[in-house]
Amino acid sequence: MTLEDLIGNTPIVRLPHLSPSPDVAIYAKLEGRNPGGSVKDRAAFGMINAALERGDIQPGDKLVEATSGNTGIALAMIARLKNLHMTLVMPDNSTRERIDTMRAYGAELILTPGEKTIEYSRTVAEEMAETGEYYLLNQFANADNYRMHERTTGPEIWRDTKGSITHFVSSMGTTGTIMGVSRYLKGQNPDVQIVGVQPTEGSQIPGIRRWSPEFLPKIFEADRVDRIIDVSQEESTAMTRRLAREEAIFAGMSSGGCVAAAVKLAEDLEQGVVVCIVCDIGDRYLSSPLFAEEGHAG
Image 1 (cartoon, helix red, strand yellow):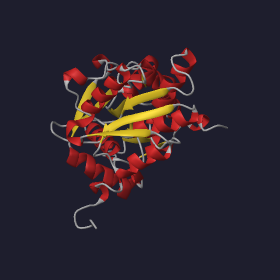
Image 2 (image 1 turned 60 degrees about the vertical axis):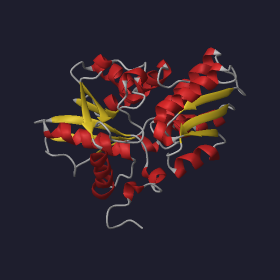
Image 3 (image 1 turned 60 degrees about the horizontal axis):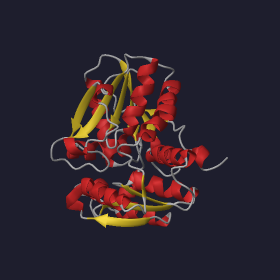
């Protein structure tokens, strides 16, 4: 077995304490079980492997990509496996754990001002690629991003729920996960409802965005999503803590936001099988205030 063989086939577990009704089952797909610790291992492997197979890149080439964290870790890991040089451009307000993990894999980091957000990091990465020195993976417009989820994540969910899934819930960043899973699940049963999650206006939730029209990922197709649920920063934080305290699942803030949306959705249902994505693990957020609850900080 190789490290690549460990990407995907993550478990799904039921969340009995968070489901509002015994007739509505909420399941979490634990993507933190991937070797790089997040759902982004799938997209990183899919994009780099496909580019190598097509001959777009060769071992030893220089890659560049903008990231808010998990994608960068995954790309740094896969680039090391494939003998590629990885340069990552990311806001400087990312957690120390994320930055140090990328560097541990040997990636070069360019930190951009946090107040300019990931949109500015994307612009910097694009300008670097225009010099001809770097190959831009462009996860926001790369079809190999969602194709990997169509080939792996969707079939795993269908298999593990024995086709009983009624609703799929996913936070939206690049939108690769929701686009790929929607393609597969709708192909199996057009009645499966696909639900996207985005931050409320003004909320900051690492890993997911409320995209302005000019930065909306090019791989996003609105008609593949049946409903979008907004979650606030406060709701995401509170649910991340509840996940750890009530379900013993230690995850990051966007995972909390996704589960919060799944619970909101479940409250409107009389019965159903809801699957949501818990996209990563919580230990890369320990230097942030995420788990420092009021009265327990310090």
